[in-house]
Image (cartoon, rainbow, N blue to C red):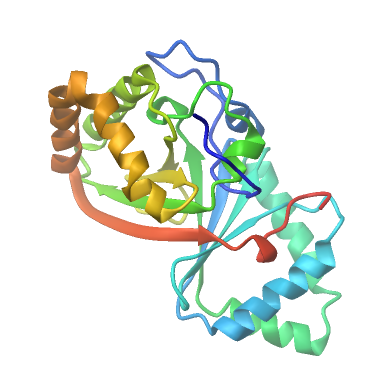
Length: 260
């Protein structure tokens, strides 16, 4: 049974064939091959929320580049912006945001300075061959999953290819198993990340579903190839120098979708 979904701007991947899988490339892969990933740490939550409320109101009903805003906790937040034209979109987003800031009032500029005080920007290019997305899964459906279990793998410099091959093979097994309620998207780090970085996002309707019924469904579906799945996971672990893990929840009212 397909999960019930709402709205969200998030996981986006590069449009290229998925090796070892018969499914067609999901629409989300074609629409946004890269993302701009902004991390805000040490956030003053009331000021930060007020700033993004201002932005949402300014861009409401326009075709301005959309974003999804995610909360890890009260002081750590993330903004993810799809980049449909890759690096060209990076320039477009920057120019549009700079132009918009010119119209800010003094009070809004103060909000901007406070909100962006600890901002870190990175670019990620998606890797659909390393991902698991149900066949026919629409953009609206993948945008609607508010909870994301995020793992950022900082790889050993000489083991990056080994890690990616193991993840590719493991994801191919999961795709063949047709696991219900399972969406895993993978990105290769670029500008603003360490040289060898892979980010994995497992999206779900809630944390409770991810660690409860969804996990049990994954376990059952993997039983026929559990030993191989664990072998590939051990290879990935051995190729990882450091692993970060975050739980992120989309804040719909502080996110913007073009035209909405």
